[in-house]
Length: 295
Image (tube, rainbow, N blue to C red; front, side, top):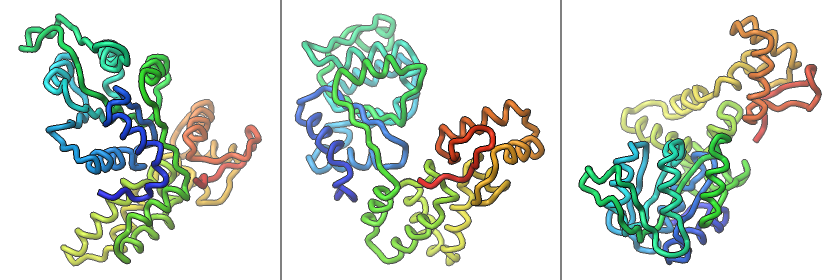
């Protein structure tokens, strides 16, 4: 499986290879959703002829501590890949388990007598390796996460707007896919940072295939889908001012009249939107100009 935009993922590729070869027991990969983290890891595993189910196993979602313990025991000799590990980190027992799994020195002994009733030994040795994927660091668990990061390899995947755009085009093996990607790029103002990613591109490709099957206008369907992806902060600002700059206080008045927010709530929400990168400010305080942000 060839990796589109390979040059943008060199650090992640090498880190995954280190883990496969046993140089490290754990790898933490952080970056926004939809930028290709899982795609790259899966491709490197494939290039190294590792098979899912035999050499590695992928875990998605959230389960109880008991079944997590059982899952780790049943796959104690494999590479475990935890996708969207944020849900599991929210429990103290899980954090303690991950600390045991990611030890770099000596034997990794996992022990918890609470779960012996599930036909699993209360103590066993874990000889596998682990890849954790996470979108961002939650403030509440920052200290625990950083302690876990320090136990193995940590890679943060950071891609610019141009990087993502170039990767998108590299993934296009037909002229139609290039046309679809051009549409996606032209609709960036509707998508914003969070929606402009490879996952959205995949959805557009699937919509095209469905339209061909159903004899529908694929351009119209994709355009309708992209415009529907506008996030709430972008949608509100767009309703107020389109893509033109607007005074902060004018936007506050708009929110108060249209959404019924209090003055303080409006100011707080704008601050949240600024942090999210959905809204750009010229830096002045209450009379700052706000507009939908470029990438």
